[in-house]
Image (cartoon, rainbow, N blue to C red):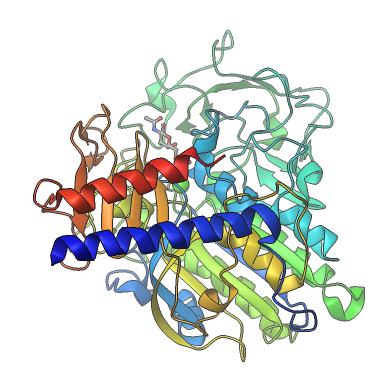
Length: 523
Ligand code: NG6
Ligand code: CA
């Protein structure tokens, strides 16, 4: 009986995925009928860094208050089965913006600060789509998708850094090249380093230290935040980083002010692109540095949570959310703005600095009880908070529909009535109804990616493909979910993935494996 059920299910899955794959290959982004496209709303994506499934009040956190995020969730749809494309930043962001699974390419892993642009300038992204739909488009905050082209570290750090965000759809950009813990520690506005003094040029290297420059490894007495693992190279603002840099002193960021700086730029973008004056809607992709390491929130958040800098960074993140929402409110734009809030991957407590995150965690559970964390094939790696608000258009509440960030592109295409060029966003499917909560029907499957393998979720089951990757990372204390054996979990009965049923449900295991194999074989 059960066996037959699985077979019938496989048949249905094949029908479903072949059907949708065909649609995606032809005209996945077209709205059903002309005239059904709503007026184009502004779109704001607030993309947190490393905020886990259990880190926000609206997802059950008690030790940190996140009133602004909670308000957004209350006024919108809060998803309980939403997934990032990968368990780390670069591949997640690649999938989000391109609608192509990051594992289809071999160069989408965590990017160095001097990596060439990973999204090629010829690629048509969600931002290109919005630009062509008549939007003013911007990226503000964390980028982590590389800049320039060709070799590593061939960027013109002291001139125009090209190609860059403008080549892939963002008409305005104010970004951090990579992460808070990677050089170069400077802001880059419209592809030029901000506040650079030509007499003190900026140099970057990921291979060779600059002579005479103090490093975390050689000058630990200069540090105000010490590394726990890695992060012992260039010292900027008393914090040692990954990568080396020299010069560019006037341009260096102060970590305590990053949230203020990028939030202000995001607010300014909204103000200067108010459709009431420009006649055009806007699309803002706002990637926060919070709550990635180094966690150095502004002193006004110190002690906000009793959890140390990690908790305080969540409070700072929520403050940024509040500033964006208040700006929309004050300009009368709330009603006509679709806001999406999510995170690029799951949580990590010790990600390389001695910031007391482990010691002060208390009862707070960053993963909300899910197994694993950032980097992991287990659920906490990619299941993330996901909230969509568009007043009057969403069906407020909680949705347990299966959703994936890979669908951003096709969903925006439907929203704006844009037809994407052939070949763009091959893995993205329209999910507008689901994201607005007007249908409880979600995706039939979600593919995830850890640092070592792929996962497939379908019909409440999770398959983790075998891999030789480490099972556990001793530095981060995260179970990575890798195993040389196949793993199968029944997420409905066992959401914390403790019972590998691969051996007792061989048909299901085989059908899930086949499904993942066929999905990954489709180019
Ligand atoms: C890891 C870093 C970690 C973080 C991560 C990327 C070490 C020891 N660890 O390699 O601190 O930077 O990369 O995080 O260097 S992500 O959220 O941007 O993917
Ligand atoms: Ca991240």
